[in-house]
Length: 231
Image 1: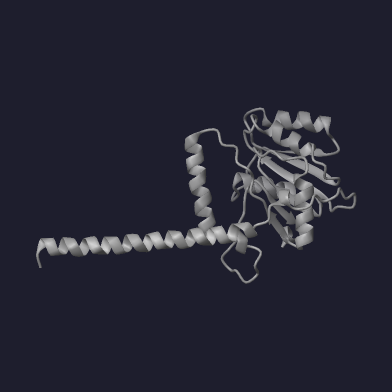
Image 2: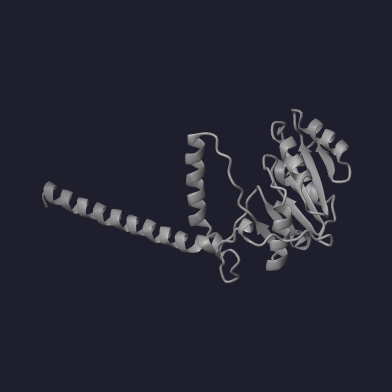
């Protein structure tokens, strides 16, 4: 067998593999194009009314050295039009002004905002998960929302989300935030991660009880019924 013949065979194998890869990505792209329109957009649904009898909701905001963002996050939560709302901010061993900023806002809004300070991390815990679990033990609200300290909420975000969770009879609602992108390289990395996530976990299949592999969690917005969280 000559070297030239081996080269031709290798080239044909590479071409076949390349076509298989291309067909795979085309198939995945059509799946995304078919599936994404089935994912509900809360802003496109009818605006739910403000319900004074809405279930109680505690928003849990863990933060470690988030002095640059925590005030804007908490102020956006304090501006929510959801009637039965409590905010639990957790200062997780910050070495900057995060805790002081939280305390100052809590003093201005004592009925809606409470602050917990973590000084030591127990053995066997990671910081964020410990902060969230600690806060969950300090509330008896019907619903728990776990979020991040760099998230900004539109005034109707919680009202719309709770209304959808209630109407869909769900236990856990995840929403995808609109990303604030400041640099081109950040956009490239986030775009790649978002595309990879769509292939790894198909969000349009998550509500389907027959789907065993599709599940999504987003640190920016995890809304759960307290009963489901305890289970």
